[in-house]
Image (cartoon, rainbow, N blue to C red; front, side, top):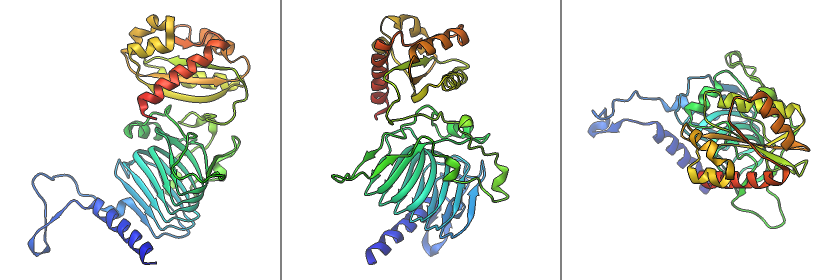
Length: 356
């Protein structure tokens, strides 16, 4: 009991200290130094603590890149419709939580029976159990001393969300949601699994019923999701995949989205996506003899790669790119045989570059 109290007390003290900007001088008075002219923030504005049976949240532009703390909440619906620096969630039970783009880490500790939608750079849980998480994470998600963890792909939309991803420095195409690392595996047991592909996000985290939060124009329609919904590491339906790469330009994201819509409409699965910068040697390794025609394009910025899977994937991708993107330079795998090498070469390079 004493150990548990000590752990929670330390967390609260840490949360308190993180929001304090003033230095104490003799007599207990607060002094503001000349080198600290920043606007002071009240940590209570960036914390939900000890709530029960409530629907609560923050509207767009109300967090604006600050760090946030959620702790000791029970049976609550919590929505952070903004980008933030880091978020810690401690000792929460039976909560539904939406977290807009987080520039750094999201850390769940001692939580249970929660359902969450999360977008972040780093994701970690410790001492958690029975959680469903729809995730967009730039790096490999980590669970530690956690059981009954289930993961799905982030899917969410509201008008401000795309700009918030940018403000948080996150790419909608860099999502390793299904590549979970279990830091404390137990022999013979599985601490995590992937949610069924047909699992509906609105069945896990409902739309907010709070009048203020209802002003955010949220859509949970999978076809409107800001983040492309990928198949991830589930068993592929076919042994044929195809790599498609769009190069930097004014319409790169729009073109990639258009390609995804076309392929999904033709019955193919989107397995994974990636946005990275490429150097000369990277391009030669991935694009082989075609590299020369793409080299000038690499100077303009990052590339967006898409892996599609399904019978006739290569031919379908070639047909669509030649008819819809005829005026745009696009790399498409040449054959079913070469496509597997294309995919391995590109994603191996990309994972190394991103440190995954």
